[in-house]
Image 1 (tube, rainbow, N blue to C red):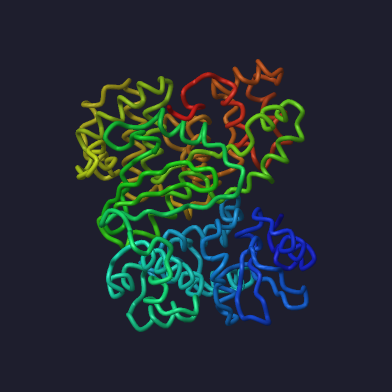
Image 2: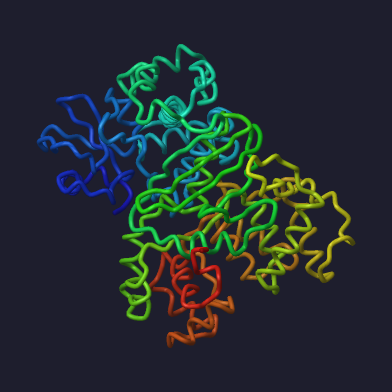
Length: 493
């Protein structure tokens, strides 16, 4: 699978005929005779090849006048893995659009964040995705509107503005155009229409490409959870979210074919960004087959992959928060890092109300941490200097670690900070920036696993040996870590 797959007609036809769900999100099938577009795994009888055309995005299908299939619901496909594994302009733009930036700041705001002109961004998105930023954001608004229509009792006017539409008229026209149904009809036809659960709580299904091994993914999040901000409760990972319009609380539960997501939001306008960040946290748009096939080619890794395929990289909902936590975790145990973070949360976090009672705060913002007295930090003086240097640069905007970050530039800026060595930079690159090729050859757990498996254990030799794992070395890290009995590798009971 590769960039521009929709141009390989023969391959796309084979995927549609086999109803292969691995390709959902890679491309969309538009059917000329019916005027609808589908995901490759649509359960209906495949149309004749001459009646199929292929598009790289749902927005491109909508631009061409096609409406979404009511059977396969292509708007609920996982996102393209391309935006996870690339750091070029198009990938960074797509991550920002998924994060709701166009709805909040417009295309000029998108361009400012990326450091390019609006014309350049329009041209590159059109060339690769068949749609510009406004059309891509419109498709996302339609998907958000559908979720709110089908899973809440909110009045349609509130849904229109919560989904990012500028007017109720535009909302009605878009929903009719994309789904061939009026908003009220969508609500009437929604599964489980009679009962929508707890008022103010959204229950969603987050799709992913199979296989997905939840053990190290949820095990890592639970084992490193900061009290007050995160917890494992009743089979779900729960945490607070700092969002553009307010705060939220999410509970994420692994299921065989999806992640159950229960969201409580202070402002429904945050739904799109909350979903985007949860998907990113759990690495749900990854292509596990491509990753595992590459790693399985190494005879040392093959047994690890075959034993537990589909490992994901546990990431973050807040890049700045993770960078701070990475510094707190330098040269200390997981338990000590949690203790340091919990003290900061209690002293400087923003209090929140949790109906279930387990969560108490948002993690402190860089601005709040930059204002604290360094002498109050119970850590060695050198790490205290590292901490204060990081939070000051985050707070004043000299260092930005958002979804739009240019990975090499962000790495260089981090390495320039006092106290930042390769391990800290690479763990931030892997889990905060989302670089799928980030590697940790100096990590003690990785070196121990390498020795036990007969791999080179010195950083330079292991890095050379790992060249064949590229561009998926961050996933190799997960398989190597999983050889240990540390709690991060096991789904909590």
